[in-house]
Image (cartoon, rainbow, N blue to C red; front, side, top):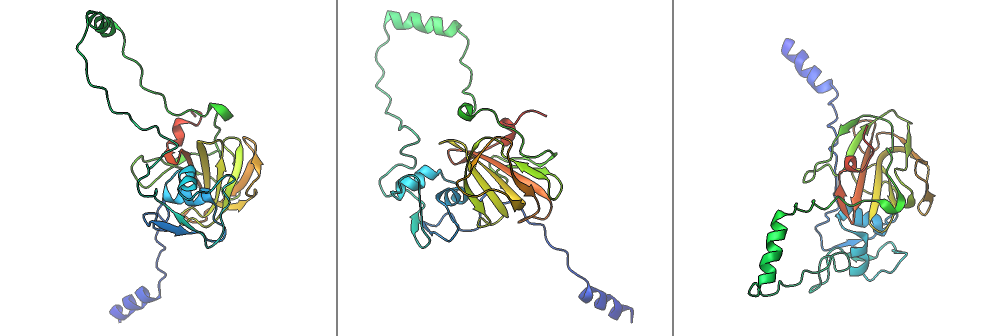
Length: 251
């Protein structure tokens, strides 16, 4: 009887749901050579899910601004054969010239250089064109950015229905739930180089094409696409995820 009771309890119990792991990229196989456009997609959302700069996809597929795409269209996710990976974003390195025999003047210059302080390392990309960043929600950081890991942004705790604000001015280039792992998502383009994303919303209050002010309420917090109420916030510079804490004001 005891054995039967244990078995009955095991069969009748409700299995706990496995937590949904945060995904920086979606499950649409970005390593595939092409991707067919689906209803609700934008060039920006496809670039986001494949980890590329939207200008790369535009150039590889010969799509001119304002980057209109249509359902059923097949987009190339890799550069055409023989082209560079980021032809318009990175200057190609020129071969180093052959060394020449040092002159007396060169030797004097080297001595002066040896006594000078080394130059500081290049600063992180700045968002000076549109001003400083602000926190999208008021809450504690519960998940941190991992440069080479699965978390491409930060997780901020909050309450269901809490206001989500734009971290910087810009234009909404995507809103929807087509990227797996992000739930109800908003992507804002701030300038040619910077985009930000706001995921797991309960309710979205803006539409694609809306011009957004810094601090404007754009959504309400929720738990769509994840296992708890939180905001997943990302910043990308030329298609590459960067640590939002390096840009947001210190708390």
